[in-house]
Amino acid sequence: MGTGYTRGKAVDKDRLAQYLEAAKGPGRTMKQFAEECNVNPSTLSRIANKKMLGGSSEALMLAIFQHADQSSGLSLDALMDANGMVPVGRVRINEQRFQELAVTNLITSEMTLRVNDAVYHHKKLRLSKTMGYMPDVLCESESFGENGLWALDIVPASHFISRRDGENADEQLTKRRNNMMNRRRFFDRLARYASIGYFHPEEVPQRFSFIVLDRDFFEDIVTEYGEQKFRNDVSLLLVDVNKLKVTDEFIFPRQEGKIMDKFFTVSVEDGTLDNEDGLFDIDDFGLGGDL
Image: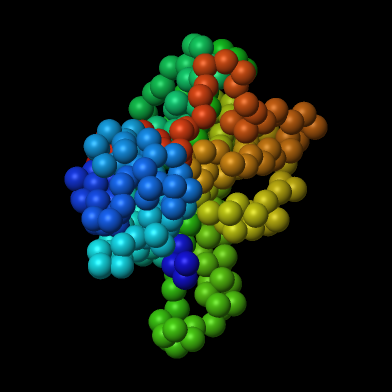
């Protein structure tokens, strides 16, 4: 598959069910089609009956496309679009909002699983007399220590695409440009955090996490800033927006030598179930709010 896809909007269950029926074609039963796609028949049945919990995996959509009836005229882009997925690098402003809202819901859900007394706040942290900074998630719990606050903020990645040479664009140039822009974006968020600590230390959350949705972005930030020492607990999280899962967690060292334990990538023994067949409940998310 030449184009990568990422989740960017709600699933169109009606259209996805229509596409599945077209892909199956008149000559196969749904069970036969599922066997050819190497998936459980119940997975396709939920899509056909519009009973799915949410978006299906990219791998499942690809399998449906590859085994689709030749007379269906179904394109991979159309199938992915109905599944709420858009080509990587073409995420528009409303799709970015959807991703951020999906990640915010993931973080609060994972936090609630791990902390019984979690309380969430919707307020700004002071930067100056008139300016404030509102993290995407601000949680309070006695288990976090000190003032009990944990702020988490999403840093969207740059997806600059060079159009100077069309299809022959220099991939290395594009990668360097994205790395540079991503470092600037992270530094901007880091500067906000530092400003709070310098001018209003009493308001600095005991824990602060930056969240990124791109593996290259994550690794570049660890390389660039990984040896920086902070006064409080600071971490960097990597979220796979398609699987809606925290897949990596880097803890920055503290000035006093102590280091916070990993939190989101440590499995919870009780109360969790694996997502079945790559389905997850995100298609009811609405859009809105500030970026």
